[in-house]
Length: 143
Image (cartoon, rainbow, N blue to C red; front, side):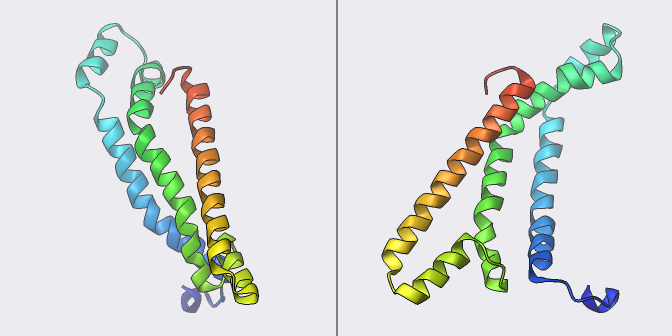
């Protein structure tokens, strides 16, 4: 890409591009399978009641689809968050990179990586609870 565009991208652009390309396929498959899982009979019943297409999508298809897709989507969002540790290998400063920097200065690997592990678990739990709150607020139902 830099040769085609004649521009040298910073490291974080390369990392963002790699993560986007990698996870867009997973998200597309989750969305496709979620929408295909809705029963055709429910759509036909809504058409028989003469409901418009927007109402059918918003009130019948979308709530069922989101409930079915929620576990896969939330695990993919958390997986994206956790794989950002890989981008420290291309020189982008993030949590793992900061931990490695501190480790190289203090030589206290065990304590540093325990703290990093706890931070990743806490951030994942916060992220998961935020996703659950957003989906519950959107649908008005419990997941």
